[in-house]
Length: 286
Image 1: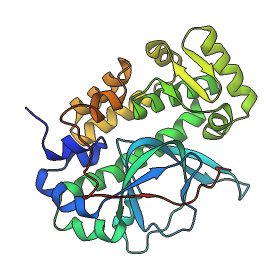
Image 2 (image 1 turned 90 degrees about the vertical axis):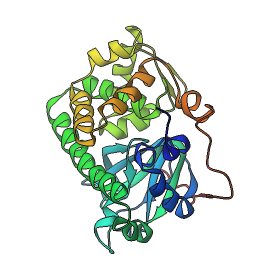
Image 3 (image 1 turned 30 degrees about the horizontal axis):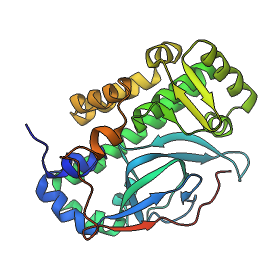
């Protein structure tokens, strides 16, 4: 069975799952935007005026800590979800989190007003957005349990697996500083754990990059939290096969650019159908 129209254009799981008539309705309202490392999409207390369907890259959600200028990462968003979905629940949705681009890429942006207006017209779109909210709550709950129950080494291995899955790439453009902030730990602990992984042949390190060399070995070193979360995503979405296919792509070292962006069926949106912008000036994650 060939891919329908939505699948042929998009990598993002939600956009790919839409029916052809729904994607045709949405397409004129989508704007392609670049995501730059360190860019802050929403600050705490800021109105959520736009939602983002991530095609490439990864964004973290940071909750305020005891220091008003520091935020603890409690979730990550990539190509299998949407950023800002709470905006469909209210005309005055406000961000609790600082959302920061940790790995660069691009997304399709849709105004929150347009998204709310489409809810009554596009039933699959509505169901997928509500499903994304459910999945986001599950991820945050799993993160809380992970932080309380598992060692730094186990959590770091899990985070690397999650990033590997979201990016469909074994090369992760991430520094030890970012990893320490994502895990809410000190950098020396991250350095020791990465050194142990590298000595065991699980990863390789270079400046600003971590390369996953042995995904199965990394999974054995990780806590089971990522597996629990991925199984839940598969069960609630009814797309167990698609989730499994994404995992298989990452496991077999198949970057999404090769599998999707360069296939004959995976052509990008034509320039005249989607506008392109940069979200806003970069602001460094603090």
